[in-house]
Length: 505
Image (tube, rainbow, N blue to C red):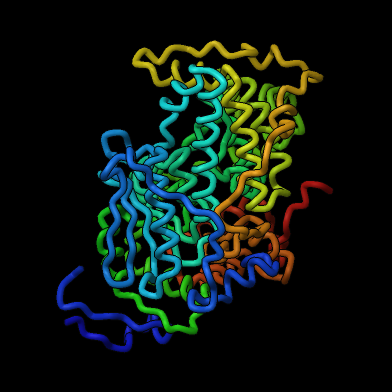
């Protein structure tokens, strides 16, 4: 029998109890956000209005589920295919999440991938491409797949139990949808993050419309258009991940999470604070900056903002062509990259990054479903998937063929944002909504957080850094992230006061 004791660990007490086993086993203050933060599972019904159920022909063990005391784990189990997501897996995951959300015994949910290569490398786009080749009915089936996937992603984004994603290994496309909206997103030395959709004639989906435009400056637009990869600690530095642990620490963290018990009256905010401290117990340090420096920083970050904060794709190209000095090599490489992407997808993704920052989380998935339906009928998707995934890695023949073939007045992106005459809004599993992540305070400080701290009081850079480190209880990496923002966006007066550089003045 397991023993039960009140927790004595000063890093967690007095907010929880821990079960000792004999064997191992700052958000927006909208009404929706306040309900999410202050409600406890006992006070909240799931509110699930629609269901997803497994079908008779689904693969038997493509997802594994496990329970260990208060911990529930979902393990994507297609390691030979880098745990790529398909409809069979979605139909298993969704009802299990609903079941756990209702259960008072389930405290924490972990999403992870089998093997050591990937959480999930994306959706099974080859199957979708093959469907599209069969004609209109096949395109409709592909669109239905995205409806299924987006329903799951929205449910995860609004889930009312603590949810942790182990972004260990490749985390791309569909894998991003399973992780990016989680309160806790743990990167490791093996993490490879990207939204590679423009390489296959598609657009950054799975809720990227919500996450990417809210990244600082033009970083989200840069990642969306170029499909640039972030690896290891840089997934953390960019804010894509909330924590960085060595992959060998993940099993120990799982065991520790299974021990956590919350008091009935602990609201979601309190529970996330406990988990945040628990994860940090297993932090073993970030790689030295001389070995793994911050990628999107300094002059490169300034160049990204200069070039990708343009109102048109042609403006981005012109800005890249005008880069000189230390960032010219990067600009030339980025220009070459953009020329390889689907021109239609680049234009759609650019408009997406401009308009989606105003979308709520519900609007995000409904609009993305609409855009996906258009792409399933566009030739670039089949062309991109078939050529990019072929053994020879042939060059896709896009339509239009190049960015130069799209003139300023062509408006190739506009039809993708228009609903068809018979289109119906995607019916999500729950009617939960917000305009800002209610759990964003558990992540790393954003550039806006640092700016507000500079403008709020007269202090030195050192004092501002110390305040953030103290607020985050000494969490690893916080000092480095805040120092980078301050070095790039502020100057110090003769009196040592940090002043924010107003680039709009």
